[in-house]
Length: 277
Image (tube, rainbow, N blue to C red; front, side, top):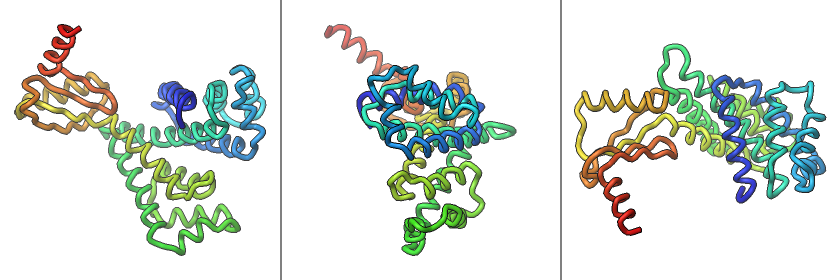
């Protein structure tokens, strides 16, 4: 996915983020069910991605299809998605799949931060491990591969087989496994699971702070750093500290795609750029 489709997906993920703290698996399941409807009709996909139609027209079309059948929240998510611009008709379905999987992953993240747990990374890591376990189970058995690829096999049989490969799997993992074996959308199930695992890994990075300092920190400094970063990001972060004497002074922090750079070197570099300009 590239160009305008990539921009539309980025916008949709940003809009979805506000709903994720209270998201439920039922929302993800509704989004996956709407995806199945969209995938079942090439004419519908063309209508929902037709550049000659206004965003309101495309949102209204979504409403006519799903109103009363799914929650208002699911209808709103898909309506906004349809109103966006897409380079290719398939990109809309790919984006909807990404949003649904992101909801599932966020539910695991939220479960980690409730009760006495202090970090959102534990259930995310467990989810990712369970997805990898499924892929390892499939790739280690030609018999399983044939069973999952058999077009005549029933959906329930494929789902039952998938669950046997990951005994004790979380409810979030079960939702993603079911989607992968029942609606792989032209991919091998392991490839779709790999895509879901990558989304989970990216979500984990929001909970990890990679910190570079110019010299080792003592216990008190580490505690102050932990408190400061927790306050800055509004969550309890896992901190990885690396010492780089070339940094000269200060600290550089990366959380996900965001970099907070308070190093002396960065300030000197900015000064040099100003003088050169």
